[in-house]
Image (tube, rainbow, N blue to C red):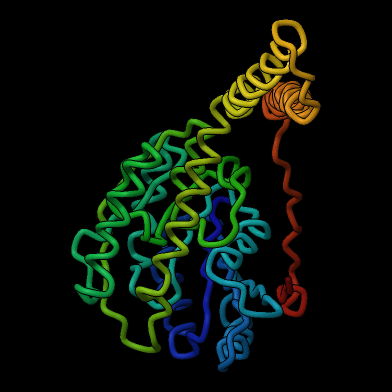
Length: 315
């Protein structure tokens, strides 16, 4: 299969029908074999039932249902796991992303890129609660991760399946996919996309997510730094531990041989413990280096069934 379009939805009962119609209209004449995965993130309205009702109308549609509301990133990860296309496109389910842009992403991927990121250059969102925090976050993410993307929060992205299926996603990590994918050294491009005002439903984003983004940014920086040289992350504290051990043992030897005082067993014991800690950290760093250099992420693909009933998946 050429393409999988992955759309996490949460309480989007008024949008799912229009969304499927818009995607079908955008891809009908593309000549691509494709599937659309609607991932219902534990919606509390009629989103799931309406999505199920569309299965008969759209043979390319599959519905994945999460048992509870897990968040956009786990929903996106579930869609990625179940997708079988060679190229995966992710987008929001509120129709602010335009499905008509999908062929542009495919064309860019066909130029040899592994990851194509959308940039909402004319964003139709509120200035104070959405645009300004987003600009600050994009600048900060670029500085910390070293991957300068103008719009990390844009869900409209395209990936080669061989790349994105190797990227671990959790928490709010979907906005850091370019930074996480940079570990594999992909060819990355950014293109302008259309952005429409939300017409139905309510936005699930707000200022309350800022602290989550900051925590995830710290985690991403740690992961990227660790992946570059795992041993270095263990050697640095090992050196500090070794210095403390040397000072403590030095004091103990001085008391034993150069003065009339008794050896302070507490100081000597602390020195031995910190010395042992230094050895332990170095050995752990060596193991981490070996594991990282030889390990590979592996995800099993789920076969796409033909019948309507079997196109309902649950997580």
